Amino acid sequence: MIAHVDSNLPLEACGLLAGSGSRVESVLMVKNQAQSPVRYVMDPIEQLNAFEWIDSHGLDILGIFHSHPTGPETVSPTDIAESAYEVVHVILSHADGTWRARGFRIEDNTYREVTLITSNQP
Ligand SMILES: [Zn+2]
Image (cartoon, rainbow, N blue to C red):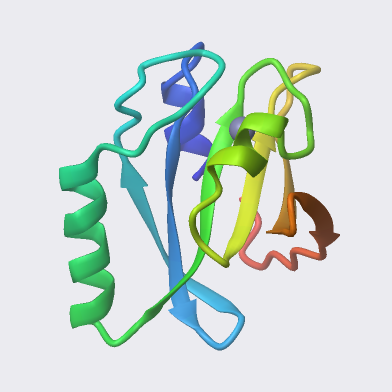
């Protein structure tokens, strides 16, 4: 995930997190159709392919991740306005030269942070 968002700098990058229960088992990269440093739009074909892959592997979509190459660490008003799925939104921010990951749920036009537990840290 970090390698993907890092290789897309200075553009925002995005993708899907799939797994079962609350455990992520697969990270799927999706092209940012917007090709913008400040917003993302998942490429619809790649997104559909990713959904089908997740489904065919018996997994659920647990989250959407995208990067904020220049911050903020939290979801932006645009993210809230464009949020279409009831999943965890992982924001990878790069405001101070290192990547930081935080998770949020977007509900009722606001957000709350959820705790991300990572294993296999590089
Ligand atoms: Zn965002």
